[in-house]
Amino acid sequence: MKGLVFREFIDLVETKFGDDVADEIIEASDLPSGGAYTSVGTYPHSEMVALVVELSKVTELSVDTLLGVFGHHLATEVFAKNYAGFFAETATTIEMLKLVEGHIHIEVRKLYPDAELPTFVFVASQDNRHEFRYESSREMAALADGLIKGTAAVFEETVEVEYEPCVEGDSRFTRFFVTLVPH
Image (cartoon, rainbow, N blue to C red; front, side):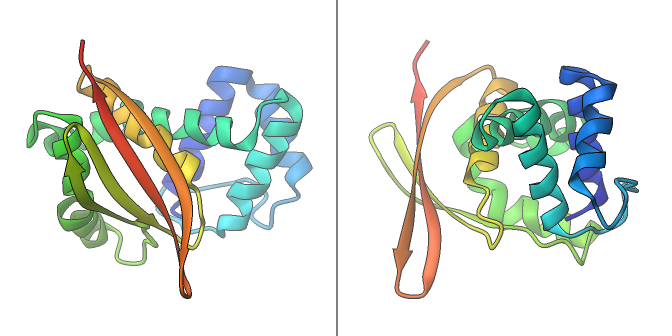
């Protein structure tokens, strides 16, 4: 995972839970990197898992809840601000989500050729319910859930998100169903 993601996670922990909690989870995680992350560095996914698990122990919030909060933070405080051009290209959450795989991830790979990105593709729409398929070796669907809800917040929309893990043959993925809630 890119160091930028780790830096943002630590910043979020410091902001929401305090510097002491950030220090505590870094120390308790016994990280090969020592918890010193550069934005351009690449670090093992296992370090993020260790940090989130330790934060869960300290805060007594579930890992999925914490990943959702982090995903929301990434969408609203990092991506929307640092990559505003992507958001300016669309007018709605659903339009933005449809651009993730075919446009946004392509641009990210240009900036970070070694980035290991999940796949997130549009499958179908029926009425106001939109299906997406998420695949990642990291299996962080709760983070994707937070990213979706954070994206909706950027567009000042409300969405209901449901997701379910799926297995087809050797393939493991998560089906997301995103429904825009009318105001």
